[in-house]
Image (cartoon, rainbow, N blue to C red):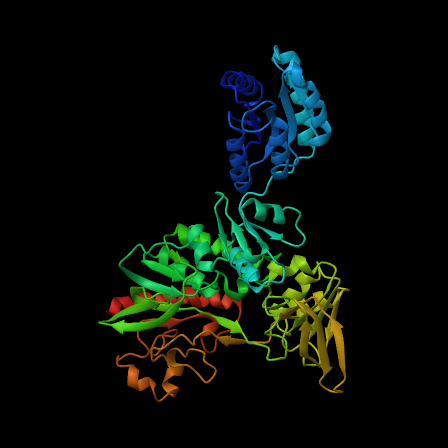
Length: 553
């Protein structure tokens, strides 16, 4: 933890040395002592300190300085650190100015030079002021700070990336956070420059892309090997399991993720049916454990990075990234999972990221405090989201087309929802319109049986209406079913095009695609169980088939 700062300013070097010496003798254990002979330099330093999340506990400032008087300095300094205690060093002839400063800059005390002995004339005064300051001191957040508008799609994208990658950050709504506007102005920026990302080292980015943020915080890892044994595309539960087992078994392993690790499971507020966790665990916690485990065992990780194609050349797999970089690997495991299907209703696209979200969007839950929100969908993800949102919102409506949840949701979740008083199930219902000005404000719902419509006040809508596989990027002749899921194993024999690409004498392994050495695991695979545990099992199983394939070539 950084120490609070005592800042001394006096243009007389001899006096400055004296006051700095006395401060260090008494306070060096609990405070960092800074000093300067220049008031202008001190003001520049304050901006850097503020950006670095340092905090000034006390200013000790000379009144008569050539660049500006002490009172003028304190007047400017208090706009940056308004809670710092303010002490003026004065000559006897300046006491009138010091007395006026008590009202002008809320001066806490003035000391007449010289203050010898400090044990009698300096320390008792400062001790009392610092004790008072400490009683109201709340340590400054240290980490990434994000300033933006609550209902900004770009701000939402950055929040999702930071949260999904387990990067601590502080969200500062420009319209409600007391320090947001001041921090923005301090760095010479305006509201047109939002979102604004301030890093722990004091540097910042304006309207940054995810790639720019990743590069600044060191998430864009470099490729370690010229040729990998296995490249895993996608860092959901299946991909993470494959990375753990691949790395632990000595394979040169690389995992590539286009958004954030964990996949849809990573956004879940509570997974309660995963083996070995009787009280459940969050998707973020599961992801954190798995990423740490994979890296500790030696797996490399690229994120955010998008794969645009896979090519085959001389028995090797060429993984082509969106920026044109090619990665050479002996095998590939595709674990890209699924995306939520779009709700094709008037107004949905307009407010996506501004009150309407696909998936759990736990980063926005706190903004729903004491408001009415809705969830569309009847699966476990929708139920988990509703339970989580019920801790914040005054009302959560679950919208489904069916009569009840029994055919689509686990019974433990149905029971929990039934016992939660601020959750209501809206059966036989659909959304037909979303409207608002800057963000979502109302939803129009229709009963599919009676055709009766009603307009509901809504601050947020979370959409879970089924999933489609993320396979559109695949240009290689990999056989997929009519819904776009990748076919593997013996199921491939049902397809006429299989014989055109498969030239080996053996049959494909259980998780092998129509291209030898390329495997698929998890929700992206046709016939997958759509459970976290089964995805983890398939990811680890894929590595055993990778070993078999590598033993052949």
